[in-house]
Image 1 (tube, one colour):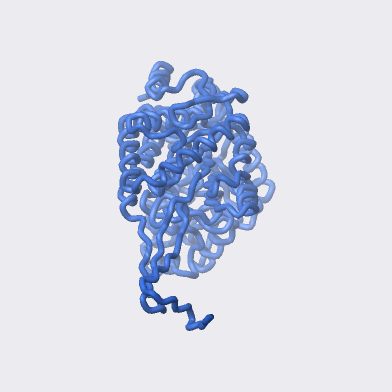
Image 2 (cartoon, helix red, strand yellow):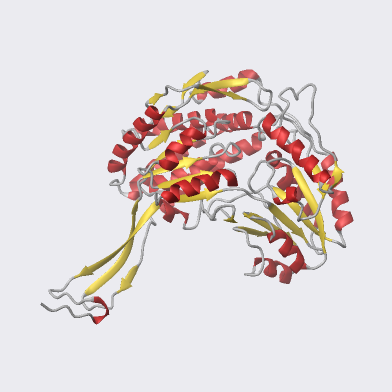
Length: 515
């Protein structure tokens, strides 16, 4: 069943309050913009969905000042009350799940199931944040000085700048925003210029909650535009935390600029994720996990599977079964639920895909499943490509890089230690997995000498973050953590307090200072 007749998409846009031309700057219900027009073209069919007026430096300045004013009020609202607002936003998301999921799918190109799943992630993080709003606790400590008490507490940080990527155009923003809100922060969101309409829809939903609760402008803010708008955020000393999701190249720039002004960065960058397939692996779940990891979202997840490291005794069997599975993939309109693979985001991504294949061949790679760009009826956008499998060596330059496309590199190993070494021998450290039925292998993989990634899975693939667990990675992935566990702490400032309840002033370490 295909959801996206033009009529259905128009209906979803209307429900979400997305117009043909939208002001891309917002402080809540107040929307404005004086910059150039950004057109959003769907990779599904190449059609212009709508346009957004980008933010000028003046628009940005106005937004920050409104956010500052809102923060002075929002930080004083008790955290459980802030949680109640987040709960209401989650309820609104439940109400708008279908049209927002359709917009995500149509504007970004992921399957409708994945689009709806992304909105569900937003709902889940809101639920998580509501509970967390009653658990922002510090510690009580014993003092070495008599008649003294020590404790630590966490306070709101201020304005949080959020720079998100096209591949998860709504969930990653909400991961950050829901936690920042319950922590007492206000947010300014700079979404990808490739998926601007999703941000308009999310802000429109927020405006309803804000209006219904008589909340001030500035708690949730939006600025749209290219990297220059992002630069305004990263350079602004009034924004103590920048959470940025994107390429390693982008993260390196952001991290350095924010560090130069002694701000805080939460970086979620590239992944070059591998699955180790043991000779004891259950191949039924292995093939499914590897397949979805490699081709889901057309390989445009930071957790997408890029490498398979396969035990040499089962290498031929695994590659044969995987190649056979690839022949069964249906590529086409992602809103048609009979299709498995949708388009890449744009033609620039297609060119990167083609260049990577050529580079792999030139380095000595052997193509097991051929790629190519699809054309003809249903592929008019020019963004549909065939998933590829290439035999390669881990040291190939192209294998060491992350290509945001459905390209899977396969290679052999004989000893587990060697497989772990290969897996770790890339600059990125986001997600990893091992497929094994041997307890000792699983534990070795999870040990200190095992996977060096922020996420290490056993008998599930590399894709699919779950709310509640801290999401993020090491090395060139940036080291940031979002979504779960104690990730909330980065959105707050820590304070240590000492209280003297006596009429004397003993100094620490027994120091005497008598006058």
